[in-house]
Amino acid sequence: LWIVAFVQANTKMILAHVFGNWYWTWNQSHIPLSAVPNAMGKVLQHHMGTSAIGSLVITICRILRSILNSNNGNNSSGGIEAILRIVLICLKACLAGLLRLIEFISDKAFVMCAIHGTNFWNSAKSVSSVMVKDIPLVVSTYYVGDIILGVCKFFVAFIGAIVFYFTIQFDQDQKAVS
Image 1 (spheres, rainbow, N blue to C red):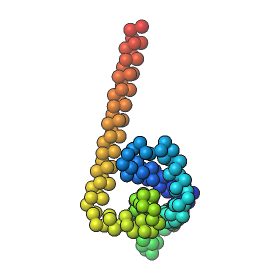
Image 2: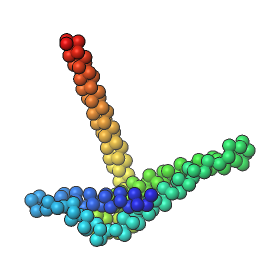
Image 3: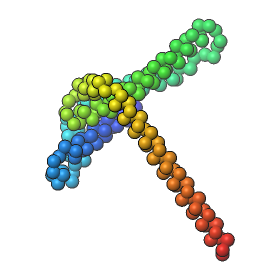
Image 4: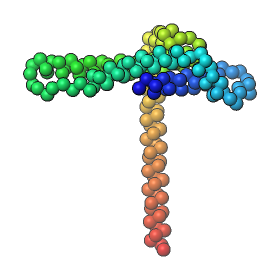
């Protein structure tokens, strides 16, 4: 579980490093063809601890969540068991929200680490302070992006269905003619 999160963190940092170098380079012809291997080298040389700490925090939250999810308890109908079940459901919901928040902040912190070269905690602190200062922008960007991606997925599926329908109709017409 930790290795998967570690690889994901390194991948995010490598991509952030490549995109950051491309974005802040004045003359795009100065970007080497080996931008990804160069970014891999930088991340492996300077940011392995950052990736390890960030992925460890995410893994600990995921393990706690899986422990809570695996503990289904008894199905007895006693009063105390019902209260404990409600408390367990609330803990699961809180931990799920905390995990989403930590993963969201970690994603942005990995980008800050790759671009600015800071450690994970300072990057997460910077990201959190920026997000708190401009909550409406963060929320609107996050949800508008999700809505746009959802609409695009719908249109791709719709166009695929139309093409499939006309392909089947054309095939049936060809069979009817012959």
